[in-house]
Length: 214
Image (cartoon, rainbow, N blue to C red; front, side, top):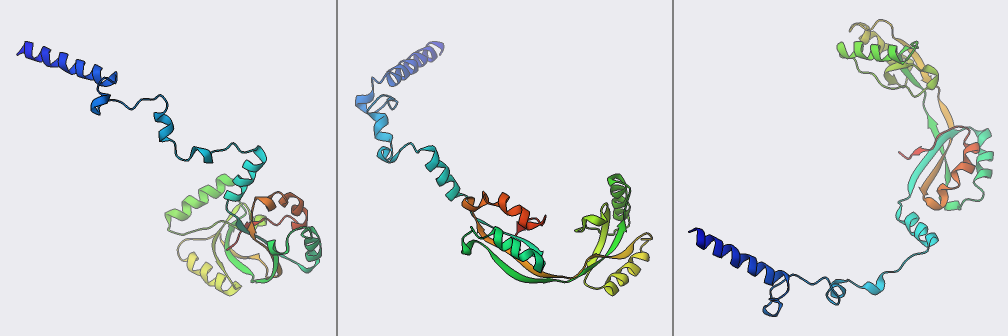
């Protein structure tokens, strides 16, 4: 039995050697040679491969990056002319000013707190009694919390009364933002050819951030 096993191993080793060394290629067995011309035969349209200059490579990369829609505002009437002047060199199809009317917003407010640690502690207390909260959109009210936003002061007051019955004692109703009328800047298809101009546009934005279009 042992002799048979040794004989089988010798035959297996011999067969592998013959296969690996290409002695069986005439029979259709053996590894694919890594030498030419076999590797050339594996290439797919090698004549289409070319090395691009850096400028063309950057251009193609920019074209592959999808354009995005951004918006900022609303802007009051006095800010419109400076904004138009800043956009004179932009293609007309690359921007638009749209009239907008944002209603005022009233919130059930908790704050201001001395620091972020106090805000986190208050969040924990609210979670314990099952009261939801949200981030503030008015930085002048930070650090603090909103327990809900409403289009009227009366609606916010009604919500505050409901929350009082659930154990909320230190909240109050405040106006998070007044009604705003003006125009919104929309950049509908901002691509890399225009992104480089955003820094020059920022002074005319007056600190208003560009956000993704809704």
